Image 1 (cartoon, rainbow, N blue to C red):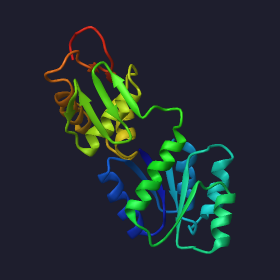
Image 2: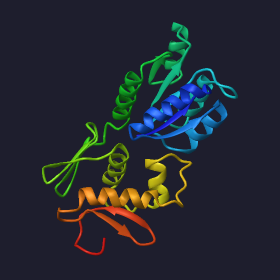
Image 3: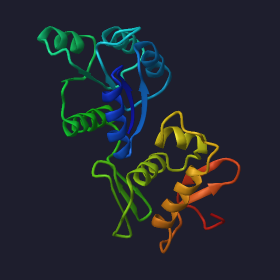
Image 4: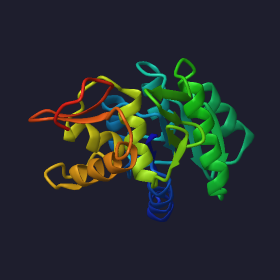
Length: 227
């Protein structure tokens, strides 16, 4: 899940960034409404967590601008708990509204619900040959055997499985699995691919995760060749 957090409170933003990245999410953070509006309009996110009170551009104004061009699910996370504020947020296009202080587990459940709602046409169970990926339960099996994956390994697998047959560059993978400020010149993508390949392909046939030299990586069923 790729998430944008727009919040000018450093403690809240850092807390959410740490918690959500530990869940395997790719997270971008904007500290004011101007940067938040730019990121929300330019990039595609699964869900946006939006504060109402922001410097530069307030959350309600940002939300109205976003709704003119995109229907990205938005949950407003704010200390403004008046009924009028909740009604205003929902009228301006928010999909959900959570008041600070909040439970991280509740926020996570709401984010997952919004992601599912935004992907009503996308199946939650993916199958490639004898590899099964449960996007909702965040589990995977190969040939009926459970594959033990870290949060980032599952996020990487989900990206590749959703786009099976599509060649993804290192830069694309870095943005989808890590955050947009990730330095794709490092070898972290190659290392993650190597670890994932050892878990889903070693001891199984056919091989599914392939390297396309000079281009990137692809997950697909094909005739055996150089990996």
